[in-house]
Structures are given as C-alpha cells and as structure tokens.
Length: 464
Image (cartoon, rainbow, N blue to C red; front, side, top):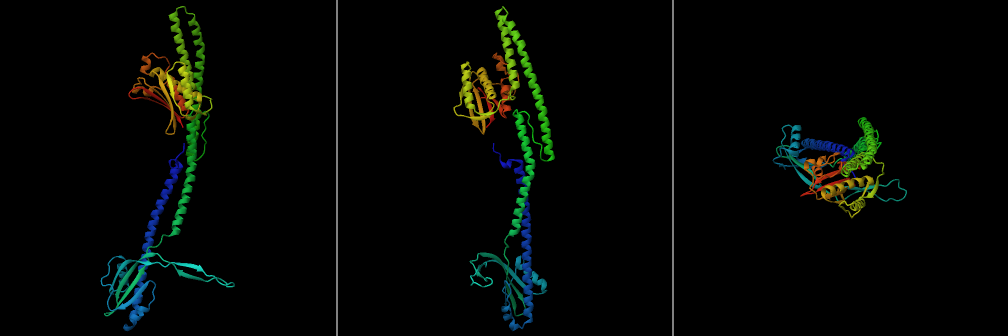
C-alpha cells in the first residue's frame, strides 16, 4: 500500500518546519520592506527640502531681476525651479509627502511661507541596454554606447511646492520622489536558500526518527501476523532505541509464552487420543446397542473437541510458506468438496482474486465459515471480491441470525449461541475462533454481522 508522504512523521515534520520558516521569513521581509521603504521616502523628502532651502539661499543672494534666469539655469536631478510673481500652490497639503516636505522646509527656514502638495504620476522608465560595437582589428578594447529601449511606465510621487522669496516673488519647484523600489532579489534568494537548507536539515533529522519508528511498526505488524523471531532494529535517538529494545524483549517473552501454550495444548491433545481410542474400543464391546451408540457419540464428540483444540493451537503458527494464490479458485474447490459431502454451500466467485497467504490455513478458515452457514443458516453462498484495497471472502446465509448482544462473543473459544444450543448442533464452538486466529495471523480480520431482514454474514478480510 502506497503511503502519502504527508501522513508520515518525516513528511509532516518537514512540512511544519518549512512552513514555519516561510511564515517567519515573510513576516520579517514585510517588516523589512516597510521600514526600508519608509527610510527611503524620508531620505528623499529630506533631500528635496535641503535642496529647496539651498536654492532659496542662492536666489536671495542674487539680484531680483536675475532670479528668474538663475532659477532656470539650475540643473538639479529630478527637480525643476521657477521664479514667478505668484505661487503655483496656493493651499498646501497638511499630510502626506507634500505636508512632510513643507514642514521640513519650515523647520530649516523659520517663519518662511511655504505650501506644498503631492500627486502620483506615471512616467516612462528609461531602460538602457549596452551593445558592443564592432571595431577594426588592432584597437585595444571595444567602446560601449547606450541606447534607449521602449521603456515601461512606472509610478512616481511628484511634489509641487511654492516658497515665498519676498513680497513680489515666489520660488516654485517641482520634485520627483522615487517610486516603489523593486523587491531585493538578493534577500529573496537568501531566504529561498535558507528554506531549502532548513527543509533538508529537517528531513535528515526526521528521517533519523522516522525510519526506526517505521522499522518498529513493521516489526509489530509482522509479530501480529504470527511470524516468529521478530526483531526490530535498534537505531535512532535514545528514546526510539529504548522503545525498540523494549519491543524486542516483549516479542521474545510473548513468543516463549505462546510456544509454551501451543506445546502444552499439542501435548494434551495428542495424549488424549490414547485414552479416547481405549474408550472407543471398550464401547465397541458393549452388548446393549443403545448404550453403545451413546458411548460412541460421546467418544466422537471428544475426538472432535480434541482435533478442534489442536487446530486452534496451530492457527497462525504454521510453518507453511506464504504464496500468492487465487482465493476465488480456493473458494470454488472448497464449495465443490463440501457439496460432495452433502453440505449446502455454493461459490459465487467467477473472477480471479489474487492474495498472498498460507493456502491451507485460509482453506481451513473458509471451511469453518461455510460449515457454520450450512449448519445454522440452512445453506450458504461464498463470494470473493476486492473492496477498498483489501480482499474479502464473504459467506452469506438466510438463517435466523444471532442476538445482537452475542455477536461480540461468537469468536470466544467454546462459545455457542443460543440458536446453536437449541438446535442440538454438535461442535465445540471453536470454528469461528480458529477462523479469527487465522485471519489475524494474516494481518486481517473476521467481521460478523446480522443481515436485514434476516440472515447472517461472515467476512474474512485480508490485506490486498
């Protein structure tokens, strides 16, 4: 089964770490860009105010009739000056770039009358590209020239201000403040590199934790499937190593205990065969036919109980190798054999369904389910299909079903429902317990449920 990387410990740790770094960088970058933009705006506004004050001082030093020509001759980057008899700005702004520039000028020229406002304009941006001219052979190095390309439009803040020079003249100035600055690509590149490095580091660290945990989960799954001598690799951080060591110790103790129980049950079942055989021989010597039949029936029940107890002990502990088989073929073959023996069960499995299992154990579990359906449900239908990535073998019957409060007890050893007791059916009540043990040994499960309006269903679900 394919795992979603985001559902693993490594994937989620890397995702959370990278998201945390990205969010922190985004917040820091937003604060940095805001402060950087504010600082650049303050510097530009201060520069405009100082240049206007300097120009005003130059004009005051010049004769009044020469001020217009002096103002026209001043070549100042991104600023234009004009001296006239009326102000271009009659009422200036109190806030924004215009208000800040006016206040800055008033601070440097106490008592001066200054008005300023600002607006946003779009102007062509001058882009230059450099081309190398071809030169005749023998020249030491090529010269370069710049040509204007078709520029895109950019936004600027244009400040217009009027500063009184004397009673009859005003200095009108128009200044262009720089527009929004492009994102600092160096900072963005450094942030991207940092995110990649942090992500790789988080992946390496989480892998040191995730891989031992995955090995531990696989070992636990193998132990639950009935495999013997399961050992989880001891690696990773100290906490994970302790968990793996504790699991290995538990698996070893559990294996020893299960082996002792199985050996005891095997020995008990084997040793019971001798006295049961002796009782059968003595029963055959009884002259009273009715008494002899009663004794033989009891002996047969004891033999059946012994065989089922031995089968329960062996369930999930077989040395049979797991192979890929067609469960639909097993179901058809089993139903055919049961029909030959007079058991009313048929197979509804025409399409092949391949699964990896121990064929003999699965056949034993399906036989128990089919015999229960025929014995207590009046006949059964066995279907094999795939559902949600799993393999399902379902046995349906049309019997009376089981009281809901007894459903959870059906897989308990030696338990028989009330319907089974009242019908006088023989059996030790180990059939479903054996089927469940075999299913769990294959990392599967046995699902039992009543059908509506009547009937019963038993589903043996195995990994796909």
